[in-house]
Image 1 (cartoon, rainbow, N blue to C red):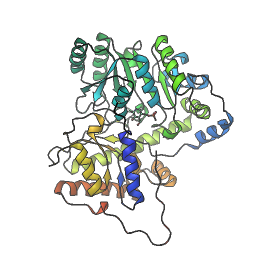
Image 2 (cartoon, rainbow, N blue to C red):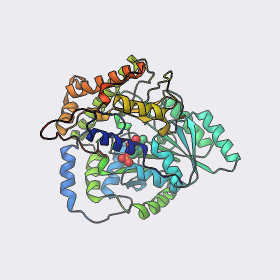
Image 3 (tube, helix red, strand yellow):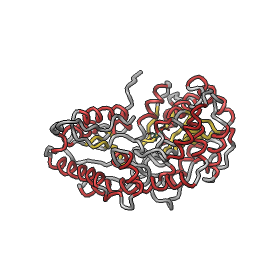
Length: 431
Ligand SMILES: Cc1ncc(COP(=O)(O)O)c(C=O)c1O
């Protein structure tokens, strides 16, 4: 079994190492929301810090009820009994792969951990390309032929995963694509795992959103969490909405042997968050606007430099395509951007893409600032792009893209002279 550190965490560690050694590096590699915790959540966490019991495996009733309410407000009637909570949606996804069993169809490209988790549980991922501009949902016709072909060779394909909106492409599949993939999953008798962790961060609130759970509730698991919409990645809390009592039983068996229950104080704060009080709705709304503004501004820099990239629809990612550059692989492209131009991105290869395709994933969410003050200012600014630190980062990106096209080396990547006197502290590792 090939077990390596998750590409995204490994890149983040390398970037922070370079920053500590004095290099100016733009961290566009790590998919962290890059925003502070809302004070009302901090208060709830503090108040609940005395709660030290394990609690029920499925999660506290208050959290399961609140999560059910969250889905109901989005048109998905949910019995709290069908909700299972975990320490992040990542372990929930891992648990689901174990509980469902068999092989899983994945969109290509797709988030780094799906394929790695499938391999860890002894399943084989079946990657099927997603149409350009509609990331997160594999092409339905190609799914049919891939699954039939795999089954004909004795493979036991049982599930299909979609990401709405998508990481790494930052796009949201159209409702038509969701309808088609749901029909295909039904015809092939596949369980659908719909990872909707970026759902509340669709940039334009008028964009129609369709979950496979709206169409095929009997076979769809929805996973979500608070890591992105409320920037609580380090608190480790996620929720899953399960379609059947049987899958719930299997999922609880897995959960009971791996994490027992999510951290009790975090569950109390999460239960409050999932009731969506006005101050948290406002926070999510501001975050959504900030993510959209910065992702669109970065997208414009790529387009201006002649790099092809689909406009982002949600979350904080772009997936530009550098076809035409004289570089052999996306790994080399990412290494060159980091070594010569001080820009950290992840190669498309890490997301299951063709290694020779010159695509990289760009995360724009660590551009909001280095300190809590800067990040709050970014959240509150009517025009965050006018803030000097965000403007400087976008300029750095623009210079790097220009220099990359001409083969020139960018000054940004050269070590800076060490400051005299007191060493200015840089933000330590963020993960
Ligand atoms: C598509 C996707 N799913 C799931 C996760 C995991 O989030 P968490 O485990 O923090 O809930 C991430 C985080 O990067 C993600 O990008």
